[in-house]
Length: 252
Image (cartoon, helix red, strand yellow):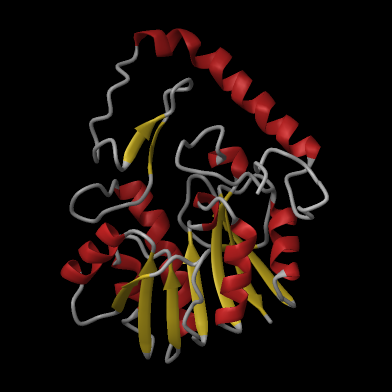
């Protein structure tokens, strides 16, 4: 597969538009210019969560976490944002069989189990699954599964929060999600706030329109959009371009 920054070719119909890649590059250059003097004085070591979880961007200095780990690496403001997405999902998963794709440390799957009939949390990282199973016994079930290379178990609802931006073949994950469940709840960070040019853990810089086209190509028929603002955890209707995170309820 070609890079997310490359554009439409014979084997890739869904890619980042040229105008959007140009915009993201301009943003990165502006941030570098703004913070260059400060970066020369900044300690570039990574102290929170360890290098495996928190990585400092090599040029703009921003420290980003790959996942939140309750009790170990879970800043309150970030945790509030993440937990709010699972709380938003409660109304859609109540009494349902749920597949939580990219469950990470497992706390979200455990929260969903409060109202769902059954929850299976899956992640491609064996260490994350081991942590989830040890930390939240009796709530959800946890399995090591890679949604881009393996078939997913069927469910009534699939959740996939803050995962798509981490994979190198997001179209495959979109197809897997739409094949697994008739309802998919998805969150995706606005690349202007957390694209690969800003977050070393991220791989995908699609604008929202490209994400919606990818989901449509994967079999989605209906799509409701919601968002979270940068300074608030509240999930609101609509998808303004300045949102920090977009949330989608997708149906087939």
